[in-house]
Length: 467
Image 1 (spheres, one colour):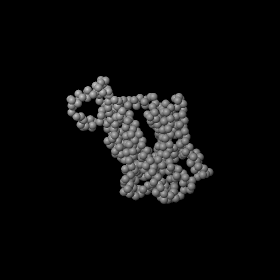
Image 2 (cartoon, helix red, strand yellow; image 1 turned 90 degrees about the vertical axis):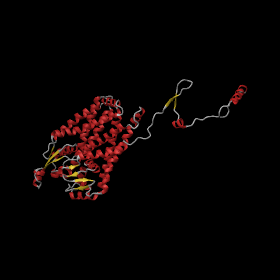
Image 3 (cartoon, rainbow, N blue to C red; image 1 turned 45 degrees about the vertical axis):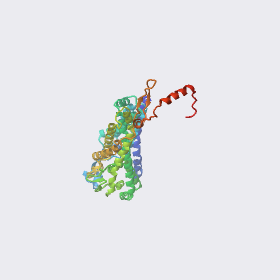
Image 4 (spheres, rainbow, N blue to C red; image 1 turned 135 degrees about the horizontal axis):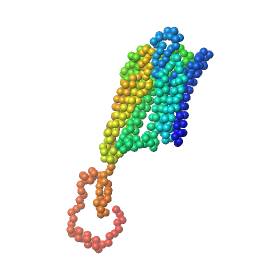
């Protein structure tokens, strides 16, 4: 495909991604403005409110400053201005997935670098336009953060998607040259591919189990969640808006569930802790979904620490399968049949990548939601990285570092010195060749030999009709 067409399609993808995210946010807010506020609605505030949610969903920290009317109602001046940085990762997930698909399509077209450059330009221009037109006295963001962070989030996803697709399918360029250099270093290419595959499988397993834990917590805490809805004293429209807002935070809550499974847990305010060991909570915001947080400890909760170990073992199993060809190649070259070095490097790489991904997810799923103690909400990246790395390392080592069985070895050929002078034949069974006694016939009788020679000279040889 022509590079200009690839650039135009990548630009269109960036435009659709931004417009789609804003449309998803603006639709329920418009309904709230129409049916909730009615004739008293300030339509000039709809666009700043939409862009504020979009910025928060794309990891941009916000500063909330409540108006004087709210302060007069009893809110202290210290609590009237606070940072809001706990992102609804549902929007960020949409941005990342869309960027990965766009980068992969550009790579299949043979110009993933052009697609990445086009995505950077268009996403940066749109982010700049949104940042410059979303001024509000209530919610504001630092200008450079409002421009750089959404652009980097989408462009980074495009870059990763393009690179991975080019690595798998080839690009006749820099990625193929890199793979050629790695292939000349023995099994380095297989180690990189196996590490990436194992880490992807491990993280997918952790996210899946985190989603199941979150669903189980919501299902078993339905009474508390309904009670919090009733305590909010909202009408049907308010309940819908609250529910939609909680759905945007589902990926954030899944990361919280992963941190709870891994062991360190998370916090709902400074000084609080929620982990399998127990929960230490003070005053919690009246958000209905927070009713799913367990408020009591259970000895069986400690067994959830085995889940990351199992996820690491699953990733190690996939990585071991990917390394199988490299191990057979080393065996055919007469090297170590176990090929321990590639498996050891893959094990360590899988644990490091999983730990880094866990830290990144924890960083994205933590932040501030209000003044005072609510400035510390979510998991801590450092403990999550350490816990996930160690647990995944144990699970991956079980599969990757265990002895190999059934390794095929080349057959031994021996020279056959026959009448023809040279040749090769397969060696007979070593057990029979080395240990079977030589079969000997009866002792020769000279008289019988002379009689047999006379008979052979006078009697014709009959054809052999039976074995």
